[in-house]
Image (cartoon, rainbow over all chains, first blue to last red; front, side, top):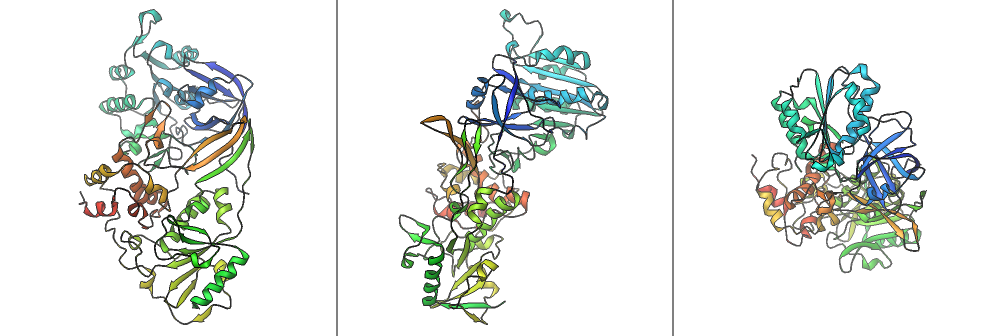
Length: 265
Length: 321
């Protein structure tokens, strides 16, 4: 009997962390080989299945960071430590970390797009000697949307980090930078030499960032973006995630920018 | 290889014989022409290309992937009896071959395999194009059948295409030195599609003519013998909300929901994009990935389009940029 690719299996939730008002992280008791940038299929029987990016890199557990935006994610939020979920995967092509050894890395993330980047950042922390300078440009809509704040001090010690929110109401007592993160990116002196950029976030942010990087003499081949599409099977059969012939689940979700830039519809 | 000859009378006996051992399916005309289980051989209707292909017999419109009770998952895949299909046209036989490629070669889909494995495919060769929209002659079709029947009036010429087919040859079949000329394997007047490389035509304004007429009804993808996009959903039992089934069901790229993600963003929202997507998947994307043309030129998507969109004509009218 051949392997039935649709069949999920149960894993236990080891920990649940609320990251922001609408986003939370589930730590799963699941030891599986994976690359940063890959995703898993997680489901609650009777509710349905959803593809979620892996947001950690550890040999002790696997974490996913989830925003409550739909049926499955709203119901996942109701689960607690000790509960079980059904999973399958991991799937897709992640960031080619090994191939990029020796490079400086720039991470540009927006909103819950920071989640898959965090997997790659965790990887870099574990393999710090393999990479040069690390710079993070991270943007959120407002102070209450900031994710992984418990990591910020750590990241600040090890890397250069720019954090900004699009807007901050006075009553939030937020004292950091305000404005689009792309503005910060535009202002900062960054060299394209031996440097690779990882991006994930709203498409408008990624397009704007790509434009800025182009002005800073970055080539499309130096940029990797992580894409989102509706998907069901996650192994190249259902075809819902197709972008001009490319399958997000097999060829992505991480694409080198030159390979996806001109893909229409 | 030699062919066989079988008279129409002996052919009826041959089919009757098949019916005693297995289930026989062939086109029957009711509200539409579709493949159905044959009880009475006189019901077999071969005058037109069946409106429905046999896709739904193998890649079923609705397939239970597994049952669940809480997080406990149970898989049960039922196998049908041996089924013999007669009346398959060259386009439909090739469509099955393409689905076999997707579900059995590129993937090992146990649900498809269970339905497909025992099936025996008997072709019925078109002497002429059964519809003015046929364009199988433009596509790269192959000979792929267990047996193929050429209608010669009072008898059939029969070609054996596989061991499965060979086993069916009985005393009713007489060896003959007659041959099917290479030109008779192709069907006349079916090379309508004049341009198959559409890679430079994506921004051609002619697509808008089609999109303008399209009402996004998904007839084209539903009747297409090669379309295989599907969605997955959970259905719970009303008497016990913890238990139910995970279902796989045909979907259509012509519908907005095809690319709608949580948060209500639709990646392929404009009708023009959806209209082009199907045609590009059929003629270009699949070939780029697997080096096989997905479309087999049956023309059902044109014949049954409620607004008469003829995408073949649209492409033929386009000028290369």
